[in-house]
Image 1: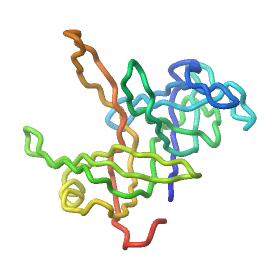
Image 2: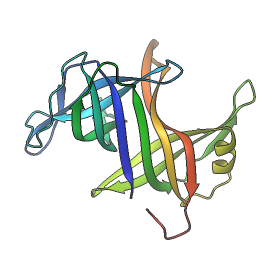
Image 3: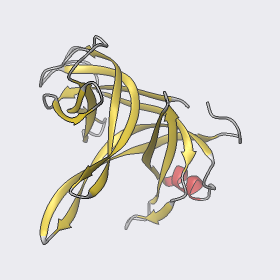
Image 4: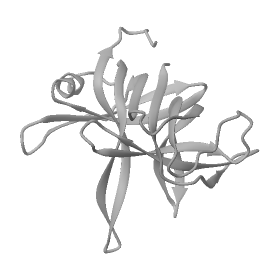
Length: 204
C-alpha cells in the first residue's frame, strides 16, 4: 500500500538511542515543522546508531528534508504499552534555512472498526478513526482525524473500507492525570486534508 512522506523542518534534538534491534541500536530525534498558520508540529524521526544507508546525522538547528514513510510500534513501559508514531527516512538532505517547511503525507490503508464522530463547542464536525496499512512488510495502525465535510463522510463509512489520504502528521498536547500527578503528553495523528474511498479490492 502507498505510504509516502515528505517533511522539511528544523532539527530539535540530537538522536537518542533507546530501542534495541537485533543488530543495531535504534532511536529517535525530533524535528519542528511549521504550518502556514504558524502552529508548530513536533515529529519523531527514526534513526540507527549503525548507519549503512548513507543517511546523514543532522545536528540541532539544521534545516533538513526527509523522504520516507510513516511507521509505528507499541512500546512497553511499566507494564503498559503506548503507540509510538515515527517517520522512517529513506533519504535525509540538508537544505537552506530559507526553505519553506513542508509536511505532506500520502497513504493508503483500511479503516479500522473504531470510528468516533463528534462536534466541537463551535459546531465543527470531527471524526476520529484509524487506518491499518502494510508497507515494506511492516504493519502499522495510524490514528487519523478529519474535519467538516471529510469528517461527515468518513463517519458514515463502513470499517474495512480502503481509503487513500492526503494529509499532514500533526502533534497535539493533552493533559493526563497519573496517581494525582498532572502530566502534559503529546500525541501524533494524521490530519486529513483530502481523501478518496477506493473500490473494494483496490489498494494503490
